[in-house]
Picture 1 (tube, one colour):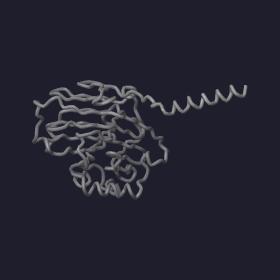
Picture 2: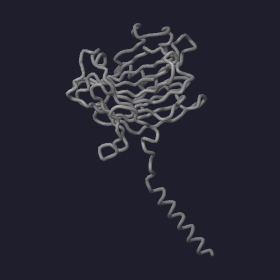
Picture 3: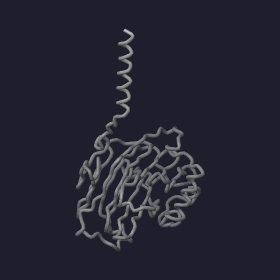
Picture 4: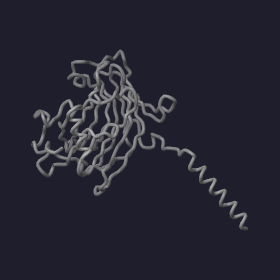
Length: 279
């Protein structure tokens, strides 16, 4: 009996080690995301494993969205943008409520295409209860067309953070109670990604138009991850107060990478100037 028991324990130990060494199968990308319209397709081959490809042709945009809605959380996705001459195109990653525009909330990351050799603009904006015009734009410190990069939105009751490759670019505090603009606090949002034609404004204020002879324009998305944050969760992941390193990071981004800022442009600003202090 003792020998048999020892053999059983040795077999179980060997099975456990084999299990640990075996790669775990990850969820398929369509478990959490659904394509909606346009030229949206799943790519799962040597060029891109478990990716969604969104393509833009004249008169036809493409979109996918999350199957679930989220009330506070961290949303991450890897994106590889349209290479070459992408002027007039806009590739987006954003969260949005569903229902009346009067109560519409939206957190935007939009990549404004450009002619060959010129960098993308990463345009960010926030809508709360139908009010937007809180725009800030940035130059990225890398070429977003050569490889995938991770873009993140962290949304809590206290603040919104926008990151690229885990580097904090923008921090929006909830200052609604001290004279600031409305803040998205009560409605869950769904995640969307799209590619669409905006050549009336996207590239150099609309002066550079889309060259449709280069269509289709295709962007790739992968590694979608959504992590919920409860309203009272106190971790850094859920957007509490910034530490000194993060504050320094935002200051460096503002000094070196920011192109425009609604706080410095009254035409872009809503609410009082109090909102723009200590962001």
